[in-house]
Image (cartoon, rainbow, N blue to C red):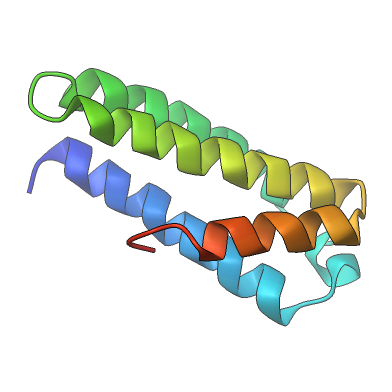
Length: 101
């Protein structure tokens, strides 16, 4: 397995954790996490940039997909931070409908 694939798997694993947590816990509990969901998503965005560099030659879409998942997680993190239940529910539904999660 390539390093890019390992990092991509980490992004997907984190997206799955976001999805599970947001489905099973109230927004108040989610907002108490340390590091915050927003901060974790920011780290995933950095990983997505690394994936883009590593995978560009053999799978340019891998980096793009990693960035899409990471950006989506960041939106979820902001909704949690701002305690926007309706927005978070909408984002959870969208993430839940994404393929291969």
